[in-house]
Length: 510
Ligand SMILES: [Zn+2]
Image 1 (cartoon, rainbow, N blue to C red):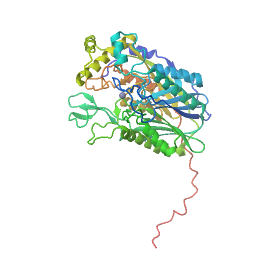
Image 2 (cartoon, rainbow, N blue to C red):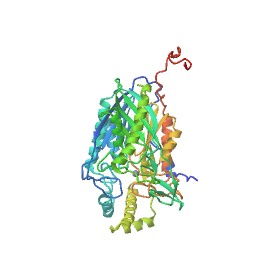
Image 3 (cartoon, protein in one colour):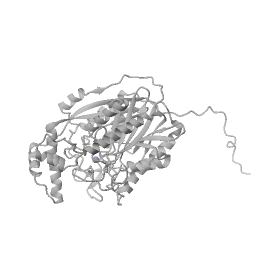
Image 4 (cartoon, rainbow, N blue to C red):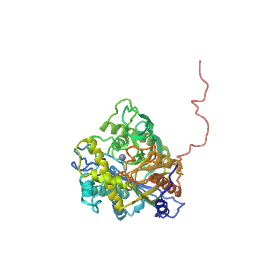
């Protein structure tokens, strides 16, 4: 049974801010499209975010980038930014949008910034500078000294990279021919949550665990692609959407598996092609196959297996699109901000955790308990400051395609549900977009048969169980406010004027 929404949520949703542009049924100007990218690689020695404690970069493998596509139909302009980052927090999104608006005139609401969730990228979180300044010294120490923390120098590098990439994409926009399509890559991603014999669901039960019954959720094999070609037939850039955690982690600073996507696409179409990767609903999807009977590849090989396979599929899609390109695409956007409360730790648990964090143990098991206790203490400090979170949902239309965003590590099932309910021929969810509210699991995963890693209560993931449904429904509602454009049909074959005279005779045996 579904739990009723807490009153606060329903009321807040009803009063949410809504951006509505005037409907415009006529659009005839050819769409102008531009692409650009900037290197936003962190420096060696900077923090490597991705866990609940600190880690540091020691090597470089391949550049992290801000990759931008701008689409302008003469009336409206949108920017899609694929960011090689674990996550991007709301204040940095607001600042990037402000500067983009200043430089290009693009409306802040029309800028989509999606983090790829690369676990080998720069320090953009989890804790922001100053975020816990309101709290006591114990909390400040736990947040700034014991947790993964963003670097103010790096945040500026990232924002400047985003803004410059969008500005150049905007500046260089030109009449390109667009193609829209989808492929399927079903062998490189796996749901990482498993139903266990004990009745609960666990995350990464690990190879050979005899308690595993079946995956607790789906994957989404769809590879969504927009390609853009110039008049000479050269691919200038593309947008690729696929759902998988970017945890392959080549040795060192890296875009993670999007590195492999880019390598394969550039290998086919040229080194100047900009590849804007937007990660789908991948909160519970990973490259690790917990049921694999053989040891899987890791590091750069795994990044290339996932990214290369997705990139190869995108190449196949684009090769097939060429007969069906268009210069017309309606551009539009809708946006809504939901207000969703956080889950609160019980006073008893909070008390226990405050006690436990006072002494940091050294042995692994005790340290594990200490980390989760630290998270509860940090969470309470966040609740004191902000008990309800602003959660942005956005729908960005490019012709027959719509990108539906969530600022979460959003469970895969929600993305599939959005695809099914959307009126668009192509619906591509984008996770960790325009902010970060941590994992947003299904109500089932947060129910009596749920559990695992994503459902832990932390300073990172803490929205009420209904959050996922609210975000899903808001996204679907936004897609329904838009008018899908047609899928480019291509040039019709000429009327039949007679068969091929070399090929219309009976078999010749003598
Ligand atoms: Zn994650």
